[in-house]
Length: 210
Image (cartoon, rainbow, N blue to C red; front, side, top):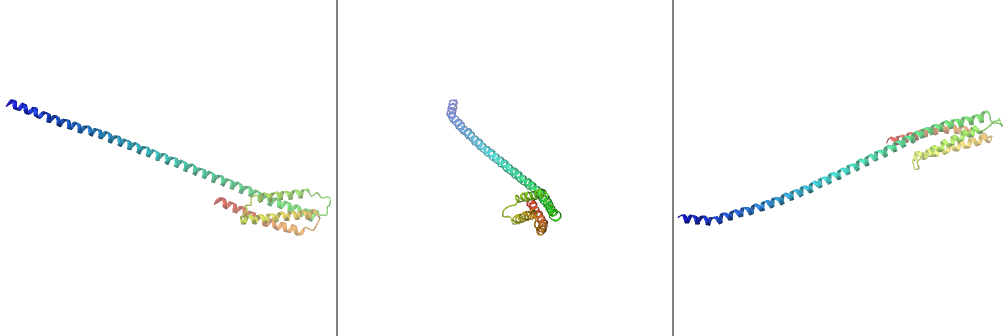
């Protein structure tokens, strides 16, 4: 009886060993698969991290470029506005010069013609100086005229007409001729041109504010 039990134990031992080996073999595969899966997950995570960092960097670069572009546009606009402001201020000064020199030239011309036209020895240099000052101020305004602009072209024509009247007047006075009509025409034209120039200046200021 004892011998039979011993034999049974011997027969059962290989079966137990086989089960043990199968379990160990299955466990090894689970470990391998787990390691591979972990590696794949880590690699995917790495790729996702690289993608996120790349997109974040691209977004930051784009944001910086947009900011620089916006700042440059603002700076250019500020410079243009400043230039227009200075141009408008310079034009305001020149318009005042036209009025001042024009009145000075007209007053001197009236004095020479109406009061002292019979004094042959009278020096005409001051009248010539007034004329050249007046002429220069008109030339300065002409540099602000924008070709193709209707109002500007109208002002240009009026300035040339004014200068032509002044030239005819000084030639008339220096030639000892009857200059009554020329004096009246220039006086009327001076008042008219001042109004036109002020409208021209207002138009420039309105464009600056737009």
